[in-house]
Length: 388
Image 1 (tube, rainbow, N blue to C red):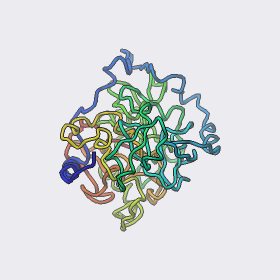
Image 2: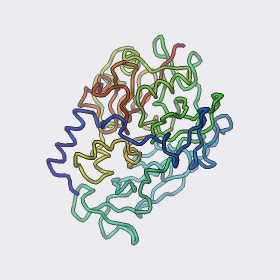
Image 3: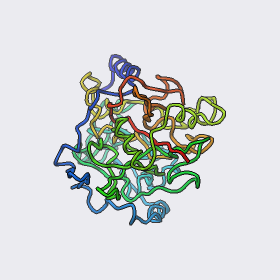
Image 4: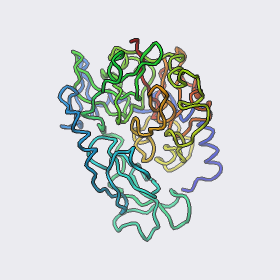
């Protein structure tokens, strides 16, 4: 439906009061759902839909991803041809989960506007240009009335599926003074990228990647900081702290997080004191929950744990996809993309997310304190800190 003024006010109110957040425990816990993942008493996890793509980090070939990135190929969305290429190289719309290879290898579609119906990715097209067999849905696109959302219903998001886009990705060493995945900032180390998760067995060995669209529940997981990964949403502060601890790290204090984001000159944004709209993944036009559910009715705000919300196209991006969104010392995405939990006892996440980086303070000053540490939804992520 076309959003009227009341719907827009509702979305703005929800963002202003909770920064796009819902209720605690908004989503189902996959660790207690036998059809998704079965947790054993020793802490190990079987992932029935992980398949052979769930690679052990110790056996991954890091050259494989770069070779895939280097070989462009064609892709098609709603009858429009694009090119599979590294997201950083794309000068237009870039869509996840269309092309083969690592998550940063995306379908690049110049001069296209994304839309979706039930999570199925589509494009806003004149109705007479939507290919036969696809579905035309009105009210999902800006502009002329005959420009509507063209989608393939077969691609609708399945909320019970657990995609593993980060399978096979491994951390790199960026600074000899810090653990892998981290850089030195002043007197401490911080993850260069927003964290993703890997699954551990009882001995602490990596067995698989974890789906970034599901809360880890009781599954034993470790935080990793990987370039080009889909960062972990759907996580509460205590689970994030535990994942950092498994990596020999910890959640950043508020002071450390602010120091890393603002740099040694204490600037308002990672790059300086002047706003730069679009430098970060920071201002999606429509709230993804409104888009996914197709309504702005109040009930959707209690459903923000739905794993399909974070899979709506043109929303969350891979870590490092916005090269201008970097601090002077080399930390990416500290503004936008996902909220980031800190170690604050009362519960604080910072930096804003891909819908809003303004309502709770601009740039690095953005902070949400409306929820305690047990809260989680599609927008909550994190990164770790450590001592050198």
